[in-house]
Amino acid sequence: MTTPYNPERYQSMDRQSLWHPYTRFSALNAGPLPVITHGEGAFLYDDQGRKYLDAISSWWACNLGHGHPRIVEAIIRQTRELQHSILGNLSHPRAIELASMIVGLFPDDRRVMFASDGSCAVEAALKIALQYWYNMGQTEKTKFVALDYAYHGDTLGAVSVGYLEHFHKPFKSALFQVFQAPSPCCGTCAFHETEQVCLNECFDTMRMLLKQHAHELAAVILEPMCQGSGGMRIQNPEYLRRLSQLCRDEGVLLIADEIAVGMGRTGKMFACDHAGITADIVCLGKSLSAGYLPISAAVARTSIYETFRDTPEDHTFYHGHTFAGNPIAAAAAVETLRVYAEEGIVAQSAAMGNVLAEALKPLASLPGVRNIRSLGMIGVVELDDDKEGRGTRRAIQVRDRLRENGILLRPLGPVIYVMPPLITPEPVLRYLVQAVGKVIAETALA
Image (tube, rainbow, N blue to C red; front, side, top):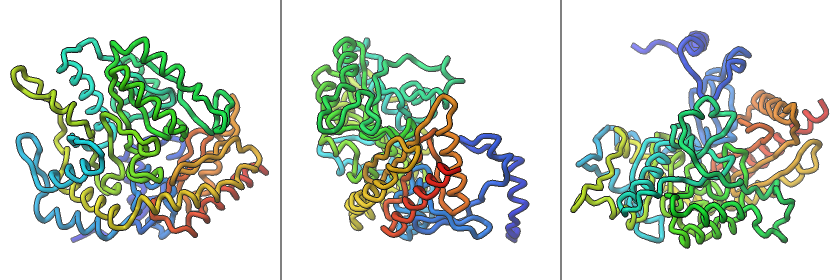
């Protein structure tokens, strides 16, 4: 017999047993957290019946919103057939279908290495790059170049190439050395350039690093077009084009971390599409299964894959995870890709991205707003900040007031951003931006 749900009991159990990721003790001490019990479309509902607009797509994953009937049905269907089977020396239909569908999204031949979450896909990509050069007999190519402000996940390899001081300082001693290039951000250009006169001065250090160190570099890794957790730093596509060509010229692999920015988030299927380039290894995750189940992938060129043969010398890729390509997660992802194709999700994202960009413009005149910027269904309002962190504290006030008004956000320091589901209706999207602007104005007055 099912025990009746008791909100107070669950709040007590939560405080006594659950360790919440990226959550400060002070937030737990401030009062009970909302307990989300179900979702529908762009909205989540808690156990008190309160309705919240999921303005960050549950950590940038639920691009198709919540409770999409086709994804839910695909999951139910698969649970009746096969719950789990490994991919080591075995296969199963959903993994085969999904890999084939992913390969079909690229202009060249690829192979798909499944993982279970974004960090694991990045770890796989880094190891593929290292072993590729080992397989090729160029064992000195063992270093990586990454951007500052990068974030690639929370496992140690991913942290090494995506170190953020305020997240990762306690782990610094365990990380490997990485060459770091300045992060481009067109919204707050370090060189005070505008789009009309930009000469990509931000690229000069990257060019110098590759020219000087190509002999020891395995790969460059970056989040194409928009760095997420580092502050929603949006790039010029010309930066990507130049980087892609430079990597080819210098014999260095390019890894594109599309975990957050892929799957239509930027108004293109992949963020690299804005620059018309394809990286040697592409990492996918988050919305690959519409955010419903954990699954990710490192998608490598076949020319890389073919160096992992086991004759005449064993170059097998001895890497994998128990739940890599899990049948139920793969079924969700297969149906997700079908929905994308049949319902024109990427085109819808591009159209709504234009609405978002237009709706954000008036917020630029609000007191204390340093910059607004957008890319597809990513909208950013960056507040003025100082050494005392006034902008960061103000962003927290904005977050708290919006939550009281039924909107869920998670600012990054002084950066307030929205990344709602791609299926968010236009009136809801406009309401979201207006609500953000209203609260920013109110905090300025306060």
